[in-house]
Image (cartoon, rainbow, N blue to C red; front, side, top):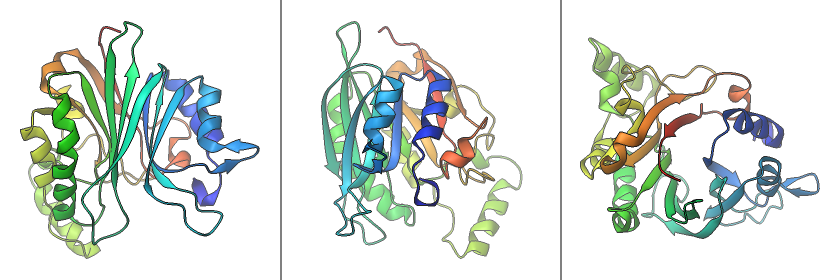
Length: 259
């Protein structure tokens, strides 16, 4: 929410313009008031979509800080959802994994996981990933997708000559730790495909943060390698008012599943 206000109008326009069937959202306050309704309820209503919300942090005693967490919008009915807490962090704030099962028109269920991992420590992100695997492994043989702000870097984005040196220098200038790529490596090793890389995008061509002048790709769509053949496209969205709606650029994938 830019400057503490509601961004429902912007988000409605952006999501509607994509004609997306499924949308993962991070850093959501719910129920955050937007006029006479909660912002998430209003967003879903305007888009004609169903939604699920999973709190990672409880309501702050201050009335302007309701529960905070991850959310999912779906064109199809939500038949079940659960908010899973990930490994306790000593960095900043609790993190979670929203598991949502939706019912496709074919009558088949599809599970979507939305997460937002720690933004300071790769070690903590990896610990949170190992906690998330507890639930992800249950869907290993079924169609499912993992979406969200992983706050992690992919080594494939820095394969060009001098890229790693520039990244290391940038990290040092910011006072940040040396670059680490353990988290994305762990996701790939478990059998997931990074949708942005899988469609043949050139390395470092899709930075998502910060939105006003994107410098790094930390937002991902992963799908099990079993369904990689259904992936048609994946790109970050830069048109219109996306930079005003969030401090991250959205990522969108086209996946041809029988629905």
